[in-house]
Image (cartoon, rainbow, N blue to C red; front, side, top):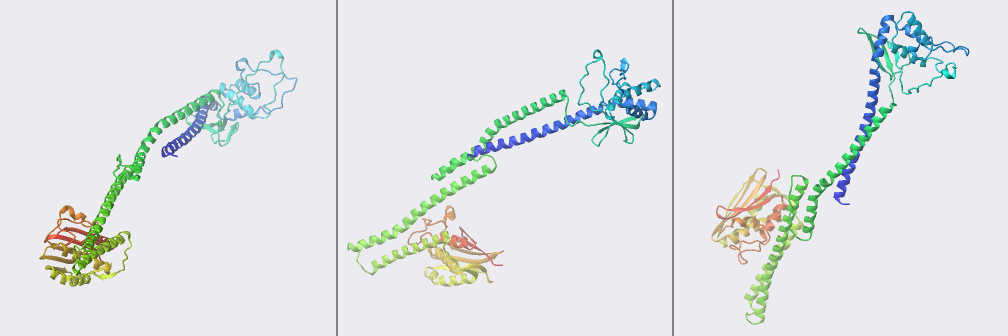
Length: 508
């Protein structure tokens, strides 16, 4: 599966999951909020009843009158021959029960009972025994169709100031509406909360809200799809460029580059890719140069040897000691070149073995100076030394350090014009030892200084095969220093020649 497909599917899956969670959470929250709103609305609708009950309480100064009115409902059911006496016409909306008769008696006694209070007391008869007993039969012509009862009607209960039940029923889930009289708490109305919506208008409104919410969620999902597709393509485009460039690089086109846009991880990856392509291009160029130089270095002595042998075979040159000596010089040169190539290759692939131990670098330098003193005298080259008197302890291989110093001194012998001077110094700087070998004229051009440690590199104005070497000595020195965690660099010497500085870490 392509990364574009994975990215678009991931974005759509996460978006769909989040929208679904939001839809469910909003729907649940709205359902709860709707129920809370209905319950608060029902509770607020009791304010008028609360005020009238407070007025009734003010007349009686007690709730016992209402309790008596409600409890009088507990008498045996009427006999069959008793007829049902309807209430007065102005109050025919209430059921003919004992509460009603008690309220009429209270009214005749001069007690004023508000209409909603009478209705409230009549409704609370449902909680009294035998309230489901059918009324007496009446004549067919007197029968009136009964209006359908609202099953969702909730009847409030009455509590006194101490929250003791007076009328109705109560539990912990009921909501309370305080009844105040002139700022004094005289009781509570308790209303059972609705657990579900029953009103058709509320249910229709809730269904409309859910449908609108679903449409909004679907619309947002379509917008996310429209935005996610170009956004995914925008993110994948740099990866596509890198893929195309990588294919070109794999096919050998090391000059390929990618455009770097932005400062994110993909831009950093593009920069590293360009660096990799440049490094591979340089390595390819170095490899081609290396092969060409090796071929040239090997071809020259072999051609000389072959020419001299052919001259001897043709009788142009006599087969004497002088001819054999010339052939031996070319063979020795070829042998040294092959050895240097072998040593350098072993050093680069890590096959050169190092037997490291604690060494006194000052003693090794003094020993090498004594060993090269006779050769310096023969070449009319003066060696000046400035060595530290204390011990310079390093962790190194004695054979490779001697090889390093020998290569550097011989390099100065080969390229220093006679009479000349070589200055050698060994000092300590902080936690490092610095070995410096500098010689007199000629020097090296500025652009050649960084290339002196490359394989087979020669400064043609000062080196040749008679006086110079193969161009591998300084490259081998660089590998030896790297194996000892040291550094080596070339610069111009004050004496007019070349200065080579080698830095070793000291053992503390």
